[in-house]
Image 1 (cartoon, rainbow over the protein chains, first blue to last red):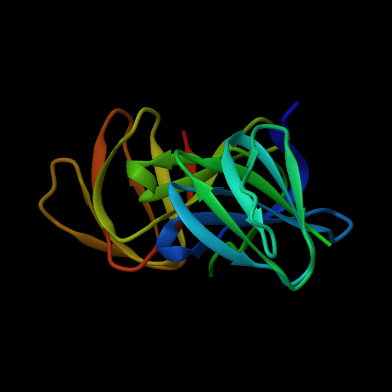
Image 2 (cartoon, helix red, strand yellow):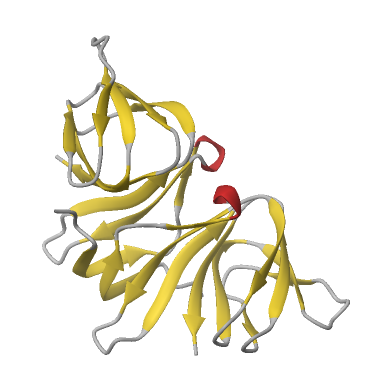
Length: 105
Length: 105
């Protein structure tokens, strides 16, 4: 079961562009102030650093990810989530596209 | 005056990816059913075709655009809008990034 839409939110009109456009996201804010983002990672192998803890929820496509300190590449597809601790990092490799919701905190 | 946020809308979580990621957008739907999109064009020269008429509103960055049938490249920056007729096309060239809201109809 994937989350196709997020209703009743405010959307930042300016995109966040990372890694020369290999990752593009838009920030969203809920009425209670909760912030998330919706984005896509295009074909690439990238390393992301976290400040706050994050939960990455796949809504379409797929990726493989590897958490800091692990040797294992794990697959994440539609409806799957994975968690990254605060002040950590993860590697992600994408063959086609990985569409996600990023939950913070 | 640029539009930094759009409140009270539903956001499609899956991005629209065009031209191998040179253009990425997310669809938004207003409570009355009106659909728009927020997106970014990365450095490239591209041609977009329209079905419905479109108004492109720049929220950050800039582009140059040329409407079908015109020889003139015109600049569009933050707060600027330009209109494209239905069933037409326009060329766009972007040096850094062009962040936009696309209004349909």
